[in-house]
Length: 158
Image (cartoon, rainbow, N blue to C red):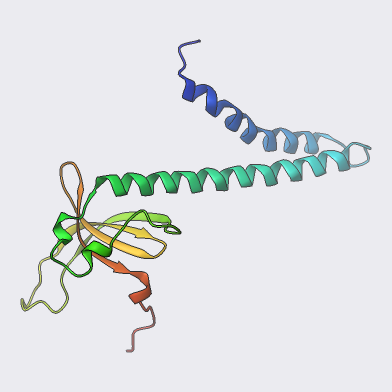
């Protein structure tokens, strides 16, 4: 129908829902405060904004969950097989939530070199874990991981 696939039709109600706050806000602005309908329109506008916020929150949560599954699919743990606790690392664990990712550079602290080399890496932050991986042609090779329970943040003494 009209050259659209099923996904395009499934998203239409969500897109429409996101237009309702604008509609009711405009209607509220155009309604005189003395009108008997003003208070009802205000209540409807408030409820529509709440529902839209909940839908946005649910959508964000679903997108992060999907990204967590994608990362688990494209991450290789082969480089960890000889390192500490590699067999204990399970990316898809109950309660683990993907938060964000970024590209950066890392060097090993305590290196014997006077000027350790910075290496490009991709960091994946989960609710309880930081993965540091090297981007390959088809996957990410995890170089090391840090449970957030092992991390303490604080001010650095001068």
